[in-house]
Image (cartoon, rainbow, N blue to C red; front, side):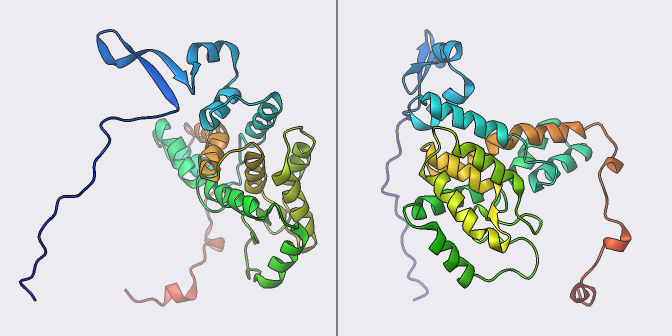
Length: 278
């Protein structure tokens, strides 16, 4: 009935009394518990880490709780170098360049670009999905799975086809750069099952003009290094952040004419949009 209004009830939950983390420990400063005199990352003193360890080693430690082996550190460092810049054709780089030339405050260029770099097309979301795809399938045979996907999936009428997360075409062809990087990683001692399976899967797709895309190589390397898929998107953003910022700052003091603008010949409004009534 209209008058039957349920009575409000207090939520039967209890929040934590204070923030807790297993990652970081701080020693409170005398007289001010909000300041720290020392910090430990997974038990390792930060001052000792900065004196004796590299950024790559501490990055690995932060997410995995242990320092990497020499071989793991080599693969992670190579990954950070190879994908330090997604290149001027990547949507995230274009976002950074447009933000820079558009007189965006410098501190806002990187966040704008990273929002695009976290996306589902050649971005962090695809890295995470590719990691889940590899973890699910890397114990099976890549050839039959590739054949099944090619048989059951419909190729889009236009644009690139990512038949599986991290695998597909780029500008209508196989992107040679990810294939080169994956082959280079295959020779590194820390290369494991995910990279090997991914290489075989990519080979099985080559006849259809498909192969590794950059997000797939990143995903496979992160899997072999023991990272969880939910960290994949953010780690990819960390990798490409320097290149995105550099491209944005490069155009920060230039006029808007420094970037291309679509001319009238190529500015096409679809017929259905022309006839749409407001």
